[in-house]
Image (tube, one colour):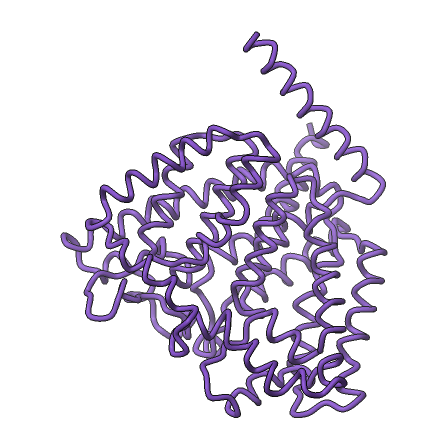
Amino acid sequence: MADELKHRGTSGVVLAVISTPLLGASLLAKFGFPPLAAEGFGIAVPLIFAMLAVAALQDRIRVDPKRFGFYCVMISVLSLPQLLRAGLYSETSLLILAALHFPYVLVVRDGHEYTDKLLRIFLGIATLLACLAIAQYFLQSIISPAILFPIDNFVPMAFVVQGFNAQGVIHYGSDILRATGVFMLEPSFLTQFLAVAIIAESVTSPRLLRLALFAAGIVVAHAGTGLLILAICLPLVVILHRRWDLLLYVTVCVVALVALGDLLNLETILNRANEFSDPKSSGFARFVGGFYLFDQLLWPEPSRALFGYGAGAFMQYTHLFQREVADMPLTKMVFEFGVVGAAVYFAFLMSCLFSSPLPRIVSLSIALTFLLNGMYVPFSHGLALSLLVLTSLPAHLRSKARTAVRRQRIETDDGLELRHA
C-alpha cells in the first residue's frame, strides 16, 4: 500500500511538471507579477523553470545527450555574429534565447508514458476555451463586456500581462469584441490553440462535437493565424491518415458559415487576406515586411547574409525602413544570426519537436505556431514542452514506437476493409 501511494504521489508530481508549460500557455497566460507584467512578461516561464527544478530535485529529469550536444552547437553558432562583426547587438537577448531554449534538452523520466494523459488535458482545456469564447462572443449584447472579459477588467492591472490585443474589436468602428476564451492573451493565440486541438483530435479519437466546438471558437475569435495552421495541416491529415470524412465536415462548415456570414461578421475575416499587400497592416508587418528589410540591409552584404547583425539587433534597425515590420521568428533569426545561424536554430528546434510519440502531424501543427508568434512569447514553447519535448521518447525507443504505430494503423485499416466487405 505504501509503495502504491508513493507511486501515485510521484506520478502526480511528474504530471504536474509536464503540464505546467501547457497551463502557462493557456489558463495562466495573462497573469504576471509587477513590474514585469507591464513589460509583457507573465509567470509562465518562471513557473516552468520552478517546476523543472522540483522535478530535478526528485531525480525525474534527465538531459538528452544528443539534444544537449546540438544545443551547445546552436549557441556557439548564434554567438558568431557577436564575435565577428555584429552591429547593435544585445548580450541580454542572446542570454534570454539560450535560457528559454535550455529546457528543450531535458526529458522527464518515463515522460512518454504520460503522453495520452497530457493530450487529454490539452483537449479538455481547448474544449473549455472554445465554450468560453463562444459565450464571450454571443453574450455581448446581453452581458457587459467587462464581465465577459473578467481578467482584463477586474484583476489589478499590475498582475495582468500587458502589450497584447486582449480586447480588440472585430473591425474599426465596431463595438463587438473578438473572443479570447477569457484566458488567452489575444484572439490569435486562441485560434492557434484550437487549430492544434482540431489536428490532434482528428488523428486520435475524433469526436464530432469537439471538432465543431473548436471550429466555432476559431470563427468567433476573428483571427486568421489558426486558419493558416489548418490550411496546411488538414489536407495532410485527410491524405496521410485517410480521414476522408473530414472533407464532408469541412463542406458542412463552409455552407454553415456562408449561411451565417452576417451574424458572425465573417466579412472581417475575409478582408484580413488583403493585409498581406497593405504596408500599414499587421499582416504585412508580421509576414511580409521583414523580407523587404532583407533586400535593403541584409542581402547586399554577403557576410551579413551569412552571419547577421547580432542578437537583439532586429528592432534596432527597423527605424531605417519605411514599411511596418514586426520581429517574427523567421525574419528575426535570419536578420540577427544570418542564414547560417537561422538554419542551425530551426534544425535544433525541429529535432526536438519531432521526437514525440504523438503523430508527426501534431508536431507539425505546433511547429507552425513558432512561425506565427514572437520568439519570446511563452505560447508556442508551452505547447511544445508539454506535448512534445518533455514527453519525448528515448532514442532507442523511437523506432520501436513508430513501428508499433504503423502496425496498429495497418491493422485498423485491415479491420475497416473487412467490415466494409
